[in-house]
Length: 238
Ligand SMILES: [Zn+2]
Image 1 (cartoon, rainbow, N blue to C red):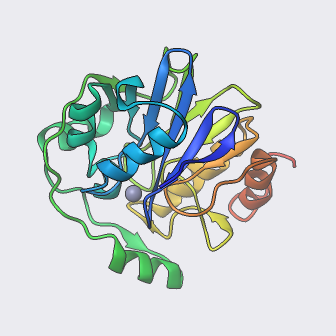
Image 2 (image 1 turned 90 degrees about the horizontal axis):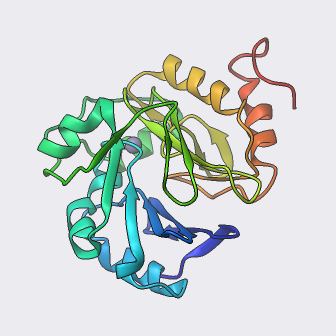
């Protein structure tokens, strides 16, 4: 599986149903999220497709505790010997294992997604660092951590402020079937909508999502247009 560029130095690896992302920077390769269980080979072939080796991976950043984002984390971290960064509010389930809370679903896409994404017990994973909103971590030349609760209580997004800015939204937003929106499955929809409006105030040119196609240009403007459906008064001007 080849990695597809979403910005210079940033790539998307489609695992089928969910995507992970790579940043190729002078300090090595950063992997964002770790896909479903059993996907390490596909992630590795994505890394090789950008001319890098598994030993070039130094950091793995996790957006939230769902099984389709941490399913291959322990195997990946072991095979590449990278540092693992996870949201502090979700560290116990990611590190020790356990079952995340159930989610509500919305619309037809939510019904479909709720059939595809099953809440299962997570296996334990290695964790090296905890992150929370406001942190700027010294990875890939500096990455900002944004609190992004709603889809899960402790979700974070990562903003790489290079190349015009690249937002790695995790599941704080999705672009399923071309509809930029909150995920149709969330623990708390009103909180997810507030997060979506907050993300629309950031500056970024490209955006990658756990689910749905990436936005390759003018991504923040697309968020601002979509944010008006939730908060016409407070959504930022396009
Ligand atoms: Zn999720």
